[in-house]
Image (tube, rainbow, N blue to C red):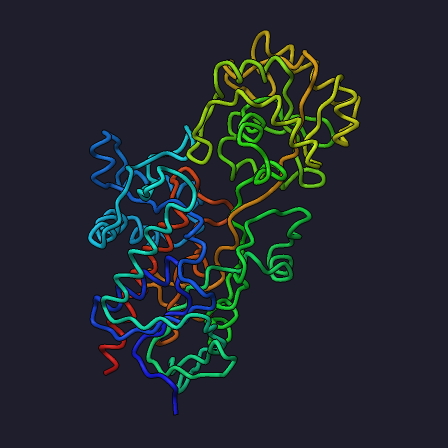
Length: 483
């Protein structure tokens, strides 16, 4: 006999799981959430807010972002390699989801671009600390409070282990309680929302070919090990490619003073280890593009280079491009900050008195870098004949000391793996739903193909919350029909 009985089990209580639980409960289902950690919220506790399209905030800000515009952008960006029905349903629901969250007491600062070339789709959650990382933890608290109000039972420190299938349908979930005892929760539907496998090095290497900590530096949120992917595949869901949701980062950026990461991420000279330029550096602001570029270089690394006159220009005037994660253009402490970072042992930063010395310290081909800098400096007097960078960002590299910073592929974690349809039903190899099995959030996020769609920011959390809701609606309808 089962230890618990319910209609819907939600596996994990991050943004997709909490959204699924609240929506299913609002639609009349009885819900239990199984959460491995001692607290709810998952990766969203690190984030800032979800995507919304056609919201009142965009209208108030006189920004024209329609579902049609966003849908066409998204499908062209992915070359139609993704499920158009799912993308359309997600985008169409996203504005109403912002209102759904507001009804729970979530407030938003407005609709923001992440970086200048992106669209204002990022709805940043309002906090008592202003705009900044972890803002979305306020959203999680509101979702959790609403779940409790609706009678959702949340079992913390209770990792799910296996989805039970009987007669081809979901019949329950096996889990381990906080005392290490195996428990069974009988149910008619299970929604997998475990957030991917960003902390599982072996899994990442097997599925993507990247070696975490060597040539990939994605967030590794403790506990995010791919449990849900494994359970869903065992239960009959089709195994789709798992990818890294990429966004490049300066090596050791989390331990650097803000001004160092900010200046070294500006659109100046970017080279590979062979000493050659690799892109129009203005596109570095889209860190997904930057990560893709780094991934295709020797050693999967690029080096951003400036001289002291560029540093002084930024210290006096502020940086060229701000982003929502680095919104402060004031970098006046750069000179002391980079010295301090070097003294603290950051091996990804280089300071040198000559270009040759910089090349040697950074492991760059010396002769090629000397030639590249010379050619680049010529472009600065006219036009960038190599990659057509905007003249505003052409600043010569002439004055010592010279500064370099390693940039490596990074990202938020893994996305995709479980085949779903637009109703977030987990489907088998024949594209048929596994009765009673649903998936949402990162585990089911197969909509980016090879590159995260950063031009519509808030996508990761937007997909989590919206697919959570869709899965909750679908599961509640299914269990009602099964009664």
